[in-house]
Image (cartoon, rainbow, N blue to C red; front, side):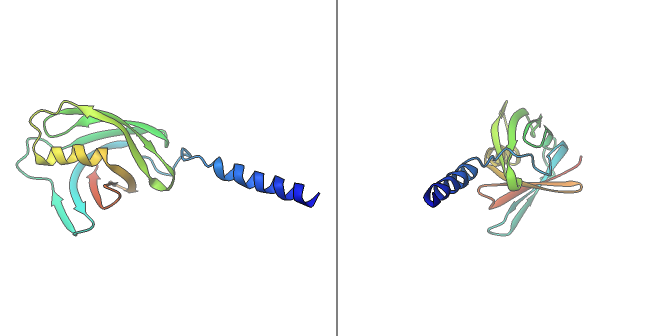
Length: 144
């Protein structure tokens, strides 16, 4: 009888562990319109601010329900859109991202790579940080 109870308990623990769902709503969202202002390399400590000689800033509008969302906007020279997923512990994953990619200067080209490699995020009132490359770098956005 004791072995049956142990077996049932082990089975219940296994089922509970296997049923962990990464799509639990997070406490934060990315909702809003955001302007990219800086890149940080957290390994080297370098910071790259938005160049003054670009024709327009990178602006994205995020809209999500704390689990799945859409983004749309423009880079320096192109229109873009995509989808993302917010996971537990402020992790995120870009599901799709694309648009025209013509004549993009380095500032915009770097953004394309960074958003595809997005790994986590954090919000601080009027700032949004999206970490990328396994959280070794991050982008800083501000309200436009």
